[in-house]
Length: 143
Image (cartoon, rainbow, N blue to C red; front, side, top):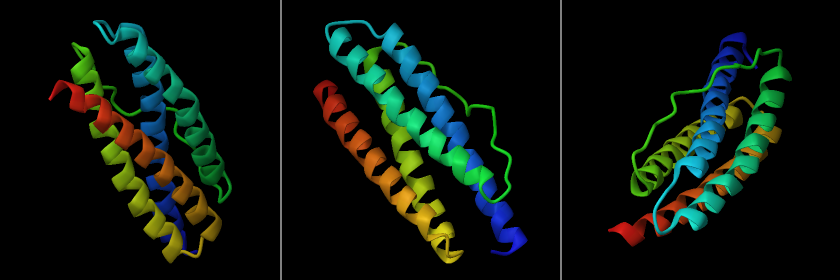
C-alpha cells in the first residue's frame, strides 16, 4: 500500500469513526429525550442501536491502528431534534450518509488489496442497511 493511499484510507476511516462516535451520542440522547405516544418503542429502538455503533467504532479503531494510524477521539456533529419524527429523520439521514461512506471506503480498501478490511466493511454495510431499512419503516408511520 503506498504511503499516500494508506494515509487517505486512514483519514477516511477516521471520518467514519467520528461518525460512529456521533451515532452513539445521538442514539443515547434521543433515547432519553424522545416523547409522545411511541416513546417506549423509540426509546428501546434508539438504545438498542448503541452496542452496534460501539462495535463499529471498535473495528474502525483497530483498522486505523493496524497500519500505524492514530484514531480520532472526536465525534462528528450530533444533530439535535425537537420531536420523535425529527429524531427518526435525522437518524435515517445519518444512516444513508454512513452507507455512502462505507461503500466508498470499501472501494478504497479493495483497490489497496486490504481484503480483510473489505470483509469488515461488507459487514458494516449490511448492519447499516438494516438500520436504514428499520428507520424508513418507522418513519413511514408519520407520512
